[in-house]
Every structure is written in C-alpha cells, then in structure tokens.
Length: 202
Image 1: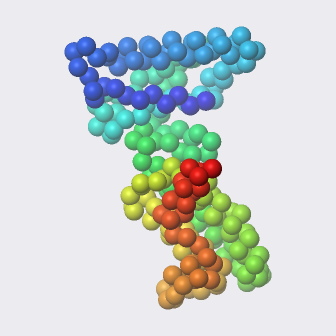
Image 2: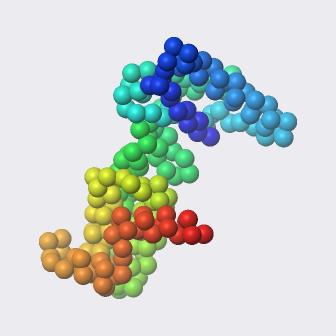
C-alpha cells in the first residue's frame, strides 16, 4: 500500500492547518480505514506500506516529509515509491520511472543483440515486443505532457530496438524510415497520445 499525501504547506494562511495537523488527520483517516478492513476480516500490511509526500520540490524540501503512524508501526516518508510497477517521485515528474524503464529495456536489448545472429527478423521483433516495447507502453499515458528530456529517453530505446531488429549499425542512415515505414512504429510522444486517446474513447 502507498499513501500519497499532498502537501498544503505552500498554501498556508494564518487560518490554514499546519503540516502537523495534516499529518494527524492522515493518521486518523488511516485508523478508520484500518478498522473497516478489520471488520471485513482484512489486514492492512504496514510492512509493505510506503508513505510519499507529493508537492513541488521547494515545498517538499522546505517543510519536510513527516512520518506516518500505521497501527503500531511508524512509516518514514520516502522520496520515491512503486505503485503497480510505476515509480512515483515526490515531484510527480516520472523522470526516475523513465530512467528505470529505459535501463531495463537497454539491458534486454543488449541480451538480444548478443544472440541476434541466431534469430530471424520475425523472432527478434516478437522478443522485442515482449521484453522492450511492452515495458515502455505500460502506463505510458501518465507521461502525457512530459518534457522532451523525459520522453527522449524512451525514444532512444525504440531507436536502439529498431537497430537490433534490422541488424543495422548505430550511425547508419535511414532510422526514420525503419521506424515509421518498415516497423510501423509511432514515436514515443505519439504513442503516449494514442494511449490517452484510446483510454478516453473507451
């Protein structure tokens, strides 16, 4: 379980509750949820719970991230937490998530490149879809509106994947033709927009 607590410290006025009040209110809410779960014969697993305070970098660094008490345990706040495979940071930029995904993808590409000569094009394409593009596409709709510095990391993954499939060198020309005409792949920003459009349409 991940508790995402939005910091209100940057919007304080003399009548605005203090961060400690916000922390206490959160703990009381957790206690109520815990009682409801106990009534339903469920258990809140504090050993696998994480607490992350979300806000701007200035707000988080200025006001700190207090710990949250869950049952008999005190959970210290973290600057990143994993939710359903997605790495969430305090500033919600997803830069750490993209860095992690691209690193995993390049590892898989290096493994495939080492055995590329033993595979035909169709088999290589299938493996890349299973181990590379599926990782990039997973929850990529959350990256809508992200800056190019974030999406370019994933675009480099697709560029390298196309090179592995076609067995071409890094600096050979014609990468755009390979991506769009031969493989029929969208660029990363277009893939994200397509995912969002498909979700909204459904």
